[in-house]
Length: 149
Image 1 (cartoon, rainbow, N blue to C red):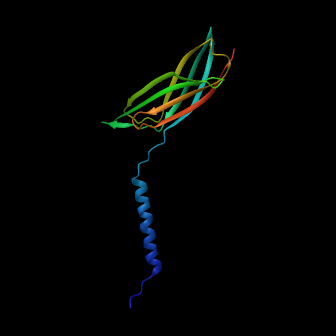
Image 2 (cartoon, one colour):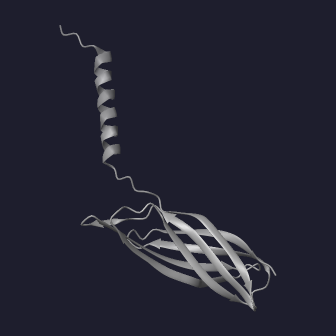
């Protein structure tokens, strides 16, 4: 008659399952989440209108590596929402196409636009719409600012 210790058998199963989970966790890609942060917007009064300056930062984008050179490609479009809720699309746009010998931690997105005298004082929102051209992921961030005389 052969005696089998049930606790020892269960312990091996749990240990094996634990090792499988650890293995798959280690092998899975640690893909960062595309994120916009630190949005700022302000306008200076210039005659006859305003100069709008806005910026935000982006991180978590795909970085292609080739011969120890990292490259990043981000497209962005900037929209403006008026105090009345009207959306003005494409007041600014651009492409960030950067290369570096080191990985990028994050990158700035900056825009500047002149708003003529038809823009009345009030609270506006600037909206950064960013696309990571390598992953095709899209993200947006809004920042409120005020036009005042």
